[in-house]
Image (cartoon, rainbow, N blue to C red; front, side, top):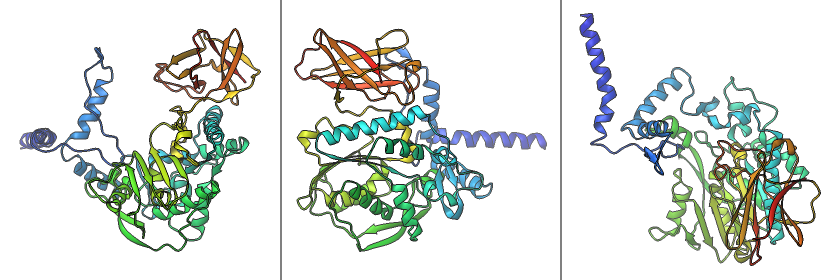
Length: 473
């Protein structure tokens, strides 16, 4: 009898395990869940070489496409979070129905990057501001605070709120550098005291009401005479299917309350994305919904607006779109792309806004902004040439020279800036570099805090006889 039960158990076990594999031939494969990036089918060979990461990549891809995966995840998480009170799938179940992203924990408990990296982040922002101002554009940097920064009281008891965070350290550094920073943490905490509910309970993001407060704060930071939308009519609906809820319960996500403002978008012209298949109101409803599919670049015209805006933003910035589009004559709003202002003069941008969420502050130095390095006067400091410990590389193009590399950490302090030196028989020219490492170009396994990158505008100047070095100041 016991042997028969064991055999039945084994048969059931393998039946359950094999059913999804059999169904893959008949049913559509599953898609990515919540904020999960879609996994691509890996290749065994890359450029004629064996893909050393094939096993891990295949495991991630295969696991993602199995039929009924959302239903399986939902059932598992309802059991573990509802009965066992266990956090799952990078989601933290907090108090009063709040869900939090596990990616925000380090900021919350006070695990921070090094002082050198804080300097690098602030210096990168300062150079963006300097470039914008030099081309007659006002600049604002702002950070969308994590939900548990504004609502720490709803985090589970096991998480201790630390005194320091990357944001608090960065604020002090930006103040030293006179960066035009709009403090949305302060703005939202003041509105919270007035009784406003500002974040979506089942989502990583703020709601549309918080976006309106943030928009007004940014416009004030730009000293922009803008529409404040004071007294605008709105409705609330309990229909928002949040990204955290989709990650936790992908087949049946919970919904929460969202604000909807009474605005019409008929008068605008969308250059990107084009609204050929739908009218403007339907397009904006798509852009503003709980699914983000077509919002990489948004470019608009509005004959009733004033000025021109360039904005680099992440997913938090999209809920400000209605107000920005309504306020400006022209907008170019980009997401998850390099900060590119090489055409700032021809585009005629009046205002430049850089927005990023708190949990991603350390990614600011992952990608070098595409702007030309500022020319500076003679810099006094230690001059370094390329050798075994200091790497200096160049790439020439038609009108520019890209100089990048990594300096030995012994030559660099937490507050050091790095300058590029072009030398020939007529003397030396100095340019300030971004403290950013071109990790992939240098074929490094991880980002260095002592890297540098500069894009030098050469025009028609012959630079073939120049030697390149760096100065640490």
